[in-house]
Image (cartoon, rainbow, N blue to C red; front, side):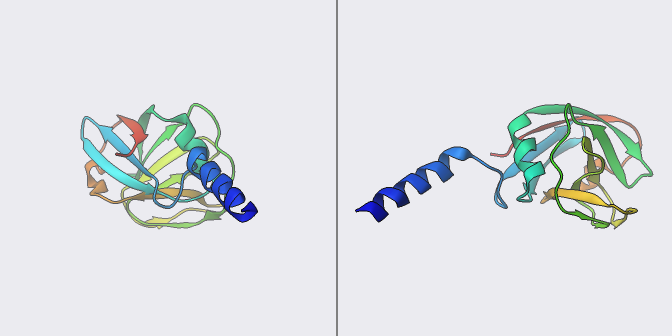
Length: 137
C-alpha cells in the first residue's frame, strides 16, 4: 500500500513539473519559414522552456549561424566545441544560437540546447531575422 502511494506521488510530481526532456519540442518560426527542434535535457533547456514563448531578433554571424540575445541568462550546463548544422546552442549565458553549418567553436564551447529536426537551411541566408520560439505541438 505504501509503495503504491509513493509511486503515485512520484508519478504525479513528474507529470506536473513539466521539465524539458529529450522528447520536449519547440517550434522556431520566422518570415522565412518554420522548423521544429528536439531539446536536450539539461538545466538550460528547462529554464528556456519556462520562458516561452519568445521573440528573438537574430543577426547573421559568419554565414554559419544566427545569433540573438535571450531576455535573461540561462543556467550553465556541459559544454562542447563541435556543432552540426541544426544545433541549437548557447554561447554566453544569454546568447542563443541556431547553427546552419557544421563547425567548431573555441573553448569553453557551447551549451547544446537541442537540434532542429527539419531543414535548418531556411536560416542560411544573409541578414537579420526575428524568430518566434514556442513550445512544440
